[in-house]
Amino acid sequence: LIAERLSMTGKIARTIAHEVRNPLTNLTLAFDQLKEEMPADNPDVKLYCEIIERNANRIEQLISEMLSSSKPKELNLELTPITEILEQTLALSIDRINLNQIKLEKNFTRDLPRVLLDREKIKIALLNIIINGLEAMQAGTGVLTVSAEQRNGCVVTVISDNGKGIAAEDIEKLFDPFYTDKPGGMGLGLTSTKNILNSHDAEVEVQSAVGEGTTFSISFKLPE
Image 1 (tube, rainbow, N blue to C red):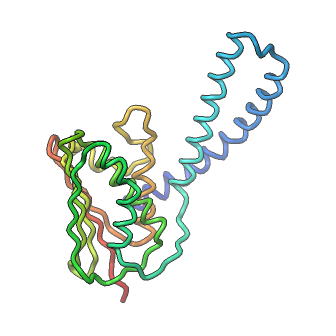
Image 2: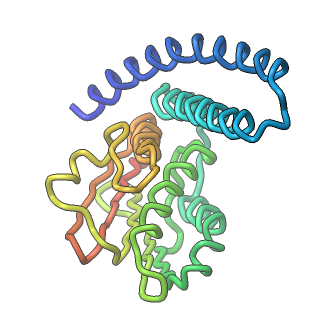
Image 3: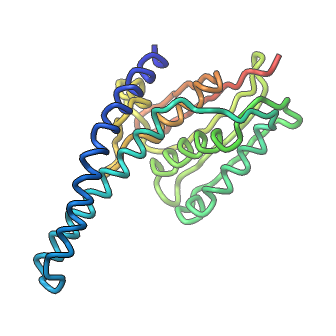
């Protein structure tokens, strides 16, 4: 059902994005022409030009993120140790972990079997989850726990935080396009994550309690 919803919302997002991008391009070109005719030293002109440019760029950014999060992912699969991917992904977020004084706990089972993954795309998917966890925690008291083990014919990666948590009624909306509780957020990061995991035939389960934290469990099937 979630896969069907993502597929449908993806089609809608791509249609809207293309329909919006054409008039936006025309507006931007016309605005560039208009700017050349206006006095550059007028403070009001400068202010309103900046407002128009800033909002046009934001619309363009939103369109790009809509397209990126909704389109089917073409995969470059290779047999890969999941612990290697996790280490590389954590390295990408280590500055944020250190700046926010987050305690990082790793628990990786040794000699796990490799799984068929697209390295770069899985890093994007995992990084989105990790960043969401980091942003949900208080500086100085946050604990991010990352583990990997073999379970029921799968390699299972678990990412947990002790942050603000998610209300039960919001968990099922977590991967919906444009759902976010962050001011100024677009709500497309976890939609992209779900799309990538779906393309890998990986399952993701989310458990959370308000005020206690959130746990993402991702199961990658072992190649036959």
